[in-house]
Amino acid sequence: MTNNNKNTATKEEQMKRKKRDELGIKKKLTARDLIHFYMPASLMNKYILPHVNDEFTKALENRQGAQITFHDGDTHTTHHRYIFKQSDNSYVLVWHPAFVKRRQLKEGDEIGLHWFKTNSKLVLLFSLLERGNQTAPCSTSCKLQPLIYLPTKLRS
Figure 1 (cartoon, rainbow, N blue to C red):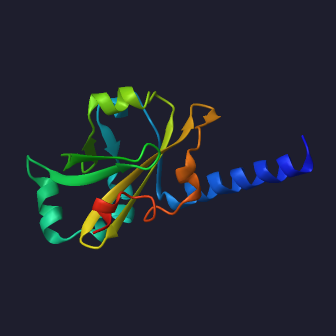
Figure 2 (cartoon, rainbow, N blue to C red; figure 1 turned 120 degrees about the vertical axis):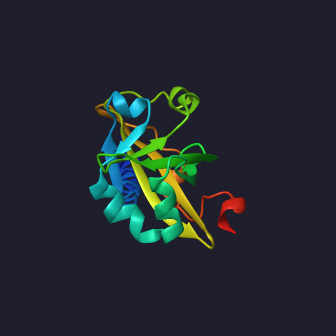
C-alpha cells in the first residue's frame, strides 16, 4: 500500500469513528430487535426524551404510540414509524419487516441512532455501524453531518 493509500484509509477510518461518535445510541441487535427495536428507558431518558414536548411524551404512553420520522442515513430513505412505551418502561420502535429485510439486518449487527430537531420536526437518524464482527460499508453519508444529508423536505 502506498503512503497516499494509507492516508486515505486513515481518513476513512476517522470518518467512520466520527460517524459512530455522532450517533448517541449504539446497540447490538438481538433476535427480538429484528421484530421490533427495543430501547431501554435509560437510553430514551438520556438521548430522546429531552428533545420532545409533553404531547409527544403522552402519545408514547397511549396505545397508538407517537409517530416519528425515521431517516436511514445510509440509504437516504425516510420512513414514518411509531414508538411506544412498554409496561416495563422500555420503549419499542415499530419498524417494518421490509426495512429489516432490505437492510439485511441480523442479530449481532450494531446500529446507531441519533435524535435531533430540524426546524419544527424531530427526526430519528438510523445508521448501520457494524455487521457482526465487520465494519459496515460506509456510504458517502459517513463524511457528512446528519443535518446536511437529510432530504430537503425534512429540513423545513
